Image 1 (cartoon, helix red, strand yellow):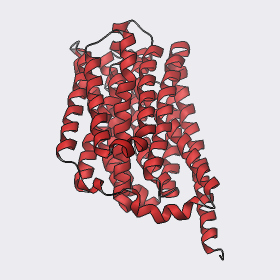
Image 2 (cartoon, helix red, strand yellow):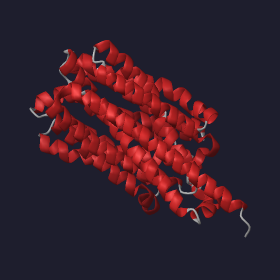
Image 3 (cartoon, helix red, strand yellow):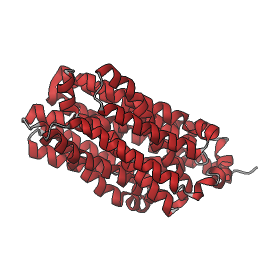
Image 4 (cartoon, helix red, strand yellow):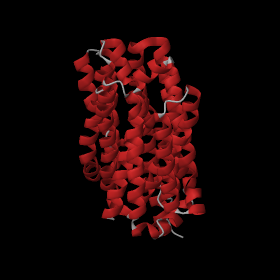
Length: 399
């Protein structure tokens, strides 16, 4: 298990670097290609659409070609796509490459996430949070690397950094494949699955629907914020491109700090309480950000927002799998697929909104996203509570 968690951390580090690279270099990339922010959002959207395809097909592909072959292929595609980006082809070619890059990111994240949750069992909150820490580390490193490359006029080399890390990750997984993954992931939950399919199927579907929409809003919100925060600071506060890109390090630094403790906090409070408290906190932070646009206020609220959102992805993933047990690979793929939908559509919307309405209005758009996220998690928690009550009644009812 220790080897799996270690390799999972390396894989999530690569994905974290890759997910942040476009946002980090958005300003110089838009300038170099002579495009608008909405066009940059299209690149992000294409990546996430590719990721959605990979995530959705992951369970089927595992059955067809196996876990190891699928993961190594995804990492290989990720590496090749990043190297292709680095040649700075024409914009149409960049948009064509993007779905392949997204397929690599999405498939890697979904497959490794299902590996961790399926194998960690009772320690899933802590194990997933630990792996997510390294996603945050990758996302934290990229703004520093990007700022240095931007200031030296070599922003395009940010893609090379991601490509090299992806190659290293591929080699490590190939050489040190965890033997625990050669055992069936779902075998330990087969009995649970039997008991949850009927007669509570409708309630289980509602829980999955609520959790799926939460993932769409959360991932879309996070991707929108990290891709356009530097642009808000450039437009509103007059920061340079390289200085604005460092603002992402504040967000991801808070993410890393929060993820170190989020698994333990969720185990102590319960996953549902953890999600409710952090979503309320995020809503308050981003509403305040809508009204306070100074540099220092933005930096402070960005840090607090990162803390609030730090554990949401991992804890919500474990929460959903525990609410509807017995389908780890399918549930994980479903939730991440909806995350891909949100990650594809909401940055595109945000780019268009920024072009048409400006930076001040976009801050309030982020506040709206945070409030929507809170509303959806309340729905998910109430649905899960209803399912649990129905399951308890069905277990105690006479045959």
